[in-house]
Image (tube, rainbow, N blue to C red):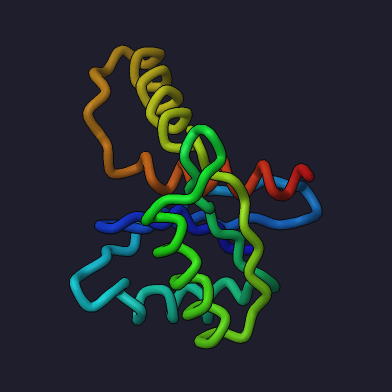
Length: 135
């Protein structure tokens, strides 16, 4: 299972498995004007051989759709066409905020200042994937 936290500049990536229902953030895929760095996602699909993809679906706090909801829907269609894998969605509201808080708390626990924002998107993907696996 691969989880993706889609953004307009970067996509957080996590891998997980059904047996332990756990996931691990593994990195980022940058998004350029022409779209995601597909070659990186291609190599991740080849390496991890997921049975499905789980993509965070962004909604407004009231549950309504927005421009990002439509962008993610288009991204999912492209993923389905490109990889022929089932694509599942999960509500991703507040996942990035939770990932930031966890990262900040972890830094404070070891006496460091929180400044590594590069891991937040992968952690958000991990949190979403673990939530999907738990259900």
